[in-house]
Image 1 (cartoon, rainbow, N blue to C red):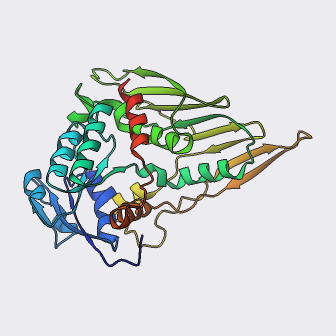
Image 2 (cartoon, one colour; image 1 turned 120 degrees about the horizontal axis):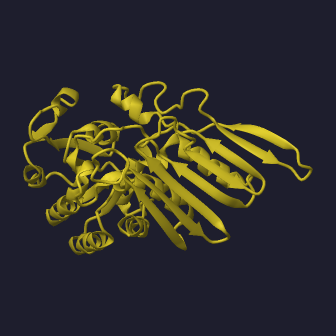
Image 3 (cartoon, rainbow, N blue to C red; image 1 turned 180 degrees about the vertical axis):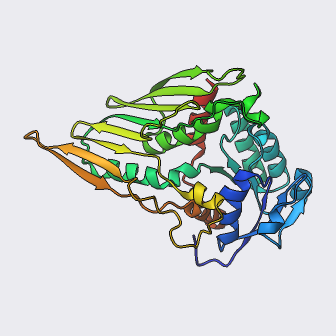
Length: 341
């Protein structure tokens, strides 16, 4: 964050469900560059219990008509992101939008044009770039010990053998299903490392009884220099595999999904509490390398502490002096072209 500026941006949140309570409100409230002023709660008024000075509006329109609010977090259901983003931009707000940004690349491009016309900025909430486990992956790729990378596997698995209550995830509507739920996380991590693929192949599956939407997907992405990346997610994995598996000509790296922030925030931990973002012991990654004589060696790779606060630092810095935001428009277009294909 640009500590030379005293500017504080007034922020509002369009929903206070799990994502608002866990992924947005604590960071807007903690960050010195934001004043978390308002939230939309149509029925149950829960935000005031956590933030006594908050204003709880009854509708999106009420919050967007608050002229003090400069940044709006769009964390409504996936199929409403385009509508609410367009409305916020037309009200002269900067926006931070949860994944997926929109359902289609054409919707995204329209919003980019609108943002440029009204002179406001769009930010993409791709928090998994700041997961502790992903930082260890980047560390291993950077140190070169794997040698030339051959393949990389990313998995995000769950076991939920029921049809969930959230219609925007479970009904056959725009931007629903597992692909649009967890696909943006995995694809953004890959795109942040390697950019746009040369080609890709996608497979979807429907496995739960009565499901209207995909609950399994796997995507193979081809990159230059014969690098192949595979992203996979399933809602029916009883015993999850490693989240990250990397193979190079000189070694392999295996890493479990280990970022603890969501679990800690759900339990009521504060960002300033001791132990926040520190992975549980035993979750470190294992790097196995081989030398020219065929001798193997193993190295435990620890992760940096997880924190999504740098994402909000990046939003602040972009608002203050137009510093480039890490998640770029072209990254999002690439992601959406794969999702919508």
